[in-house]
Structure formats: structure tokens, C-alpha cells
Image (cartoon, rainbow, N blue to C red):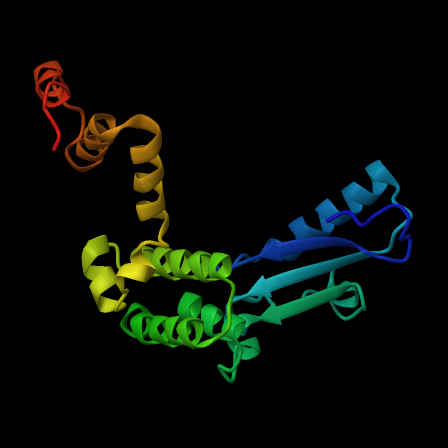
Length: 206
């Protein structure tokens, strides 16, 4: 991330998010850092941030890079430690990301409860509901979205904030009811035959 030119003391940030063990991580990271410095000659200092889910994913000490890792140029963040105790909304969101599938629903309920009880802007609420739902869908791929929504106790108000509902509503307004039905059937059933498309197009909608 490049800071503004009028702030020469602000660092150029290099951010690496690593959720799997990679013994070559630091060699790749520092190679990219110094290649950038060589090509662009920034006036700003540099700082690297490496985000891990746990310490077990950190490759650890390396004789070639230990001096850099111990310098003030590198910060390593371990999300499981940072997110304890679960107090802030961001810590609880990270808890959903890190939780095992068996615990993810419980962590998600904690986030949604805080969202409902807190004085949070509706746009932010919608973004959080979308994010939580997407995380749970990814963690529980064998369950349908409808089942997950029931497990999360999403209300009608919550569902109207989800991206799926908003997409459908926007499509309905922009393209008309028939086109919306065709799109939804395509999503659920795959490509329709020309005959089926013609029959649906000729339907009279109440």
C-alpha cells in the first residue's frame, strides 16, 4: 500500500495473508519487498505485515531472514491470539473465520447478536450479515443457503440485507418479472431449452 507523496515518513506497507504453512514464505516476501525498492526507489520507509491464523502456520526462525524478522520492519499477527477475548465486533468476526465448522454457527450467532443490539449503520449491518452468511456457506458447503439461514436465525429483515435478496430485487426492478424468473430458473436448473424459455416468456403474470 503506497502512502501519499506528501507524507514521506509514512511507510509503504507490504501485507501478506498466509493461512497455510509455506516454508518459502519469507524468501518470497523479502524478495518482492527488495525488488519493489530497487525498481521504484520510494522515499518512504517500508513495513511488512504477515497475518497468520495461528503460530503453527508461521515458518519460524530462518537464519537468512531472522535479522529482518526481529527488526522494526516486520509485524507478524496471529489472529487466534489477537481475537481473544471475544469482545469487539471485529474480534468476533475473526472468531467466525477461524472457528471449526462445528463451532462456526455459535460464533456467527455472537456476531449477529451484537449487530442487532448495537447502534450500527444499516449499510454496515448489511455488509456484516452478508459476510457472516458467506463465511458459513464456505465452511458448510453441503448445506443449502436456506438451511444455513435458518441455522443463523436470520429474520426477514436480515434476509432483505443479504446480497442474494438485493441482487434478485435489483434484477426484478431493472429487467422485469419474466426475465427475473428466467434468471432464477437458470441458476437453479441450468440452461433452459428454447421451448421452455418461450413458454415462460409467454406467461401472464398476476
